[in-house]
Amino acid sequence: MKTEYLSNKPVDIQKAAAILKNGGLVGIPTETVYGLAANALNGAAVAKIFEAKGRPMDNPLIVHIAEYDDIARFELTSDALPELYTLAKNFWPGPLTIIMKKGKAVPDEVTAGLDTVAVRFPSHPVARAVIHAAGLPLAAPSANLSGSPSPTTAQHVLNDMDGRIDAVVDGGSCVVGVESTVITLTTKTPTLLRPGSVTVEQLRRLLGKIEIDDAVLHQLEDGRAAPSPGMKYKHYAPKANVVLLKCGDDEFIEYVNSHGGRGVAALCCDEDIPLLSGVKAISLGKRGDYTEQARNLFDSLRRIDGYGDVMTVYSRLPQTDGVGMAVYNRLTRAAGFEVIDLEAV
Ligand code: AMP
Ligand code: MG
Image 1 (cartoon, rainbow, N blue to C red):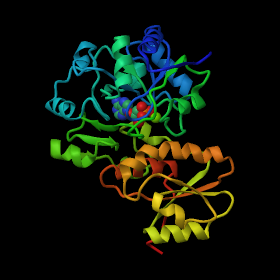
Image 2: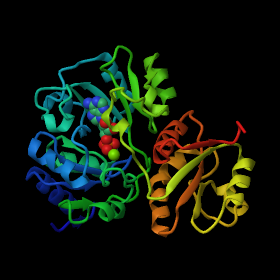
Image 3: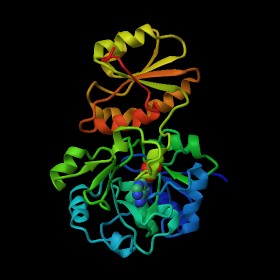
């Protein structure tokens, strides 16, 4: 299969829409990461997403819409929860995915057989234009090969998916850089299943009580069923081994400098660059600026693999407040939860 490169011009948006209406697969930009889209109402089209990504069949997809009213129009759910309305009014269009009871129009391929469905209304103008032009809700996971870092440019999508999908629409670099915040309204108390740039603090201000699922900040316990199947898979990992250091700024510099060498890299901050020596250093952004670090995270993980010879990557264990929780969640998974606590020694 030849993968067509499309621009974000109207004529190319129409081409992308035609492919989707025909049951094909198109990589599309969103404000979070690039998505791999198919017609969410067509089970056979959705099944091709799993094949192209090598995604485990039990990991459900997010349905993307371009209007709040699409929920009712496409019968995605029969829920009319007050929390759904409140969240949508405040955060849609935007990087928040809401899980609710599945409506009858949603095929089992989308939800991996669950009786719930994840829905998001993205703010990216190109994503919205493609959904509008297709006149369909689009099922879309991140457009990477399963297990590798999510793509934040059209080139990242091509690196993983060239020859496996029909087309990719280039909408530039993603502004948020990590996947959407996922909250479920199907539990007694609304529960955060994946942190993103919509923060727990923002959600609490709006809804009052929300819970944070244990698997957001910790490794999923053996034998516990994942409330969100994506939680149980190794994710976001470059080929090199990521090791996180729990420590202050000075200790970070000292540790990395004394463990340097040819196959060693540091995923660090701007202020660290002049202080590090003997390692390949890639900055995620300014210290403490987790919005910027989130934006650069996946591109940086891919660049480390681009060096070819990196075996070990050291990075800081992030804080968990604000957008820091999203960076913490992705990095701990990329590291397979390997953390060296320098404060404890
Ligand atoms: P991706 O689009 O690749 O970021 O993956 C979508 C994420 O949403 C995965 O972690 C899924 O497990 C999660 N997800 C999608 N639908 C549901 C659902 N109905 N219930 C719980 N988690 C879901
Ligand atoms: Mg993904």
